[in-house]
Image (cartoon, rainbow, N blue to C red; front, side, top):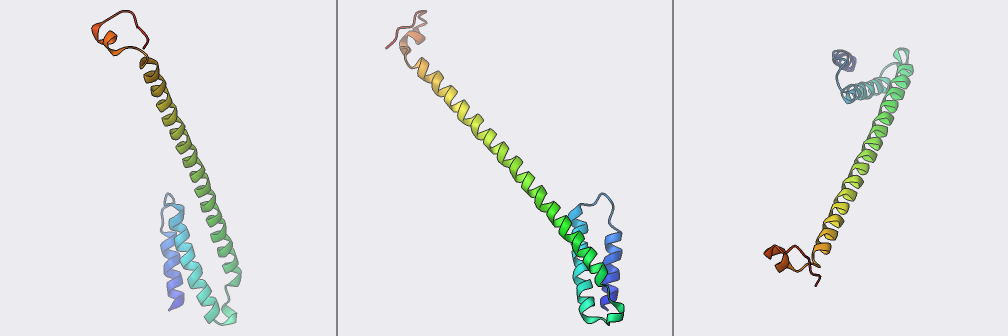
Length: 121
């Protein structure tokens, strides 16, 4: 029964299209690894697949490392974008603050009446 489950997982993983996400393959390979480890613990030593288990385990580990590296890079890029947005927002705030500070020294009635000269407060 376990042997047929392993074959079914292999067929399913082999049926994935090449443009499928890597994590889809990884999930299939991890399922295969779990069933293969169970096979290894129950099966006769004459039908051992230990050498293949090592290769599959190494493959899963390398793909997981790749996934972690991609997450690290993605988080760094996101942090850089957030810092940029924060700096942009702060700089806009200070520009408007300085603008209003400069024009707060002008009497409002002069601006309303259309006076051409600005009288400081």
